[in-house]
Image (cartoon, rainbow, N blue to C red; front, top):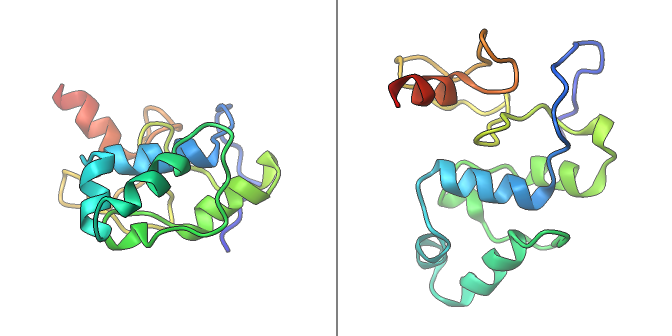
Length: 130
């Protein structure tokens, strides 16, 4: 389980909920709920995915989302089960966490933006390209 570094100061950010995390990771992968359900095995997964993204819902058994998109069951569990001061630091746009090796668009690995400490370099690059 990954924990937030309480000694490092971070910018004030809203508390991310588990349903926000699922939605952000799916959207960052550029997939619809239907596409993720199809990749997992069909329409039967669609209801489960909609529950995962429903505000207020916390699900005990997760589909293997990490087989379809960059997703961490550990991060989901921390968001669902721990108080906010123990949540991992996540990008406020895509839900990336610093323990995930994800390439950014500048041929490096994603890290935290120097210009905006609440987002990752991948989202920063996407913003600059827009």
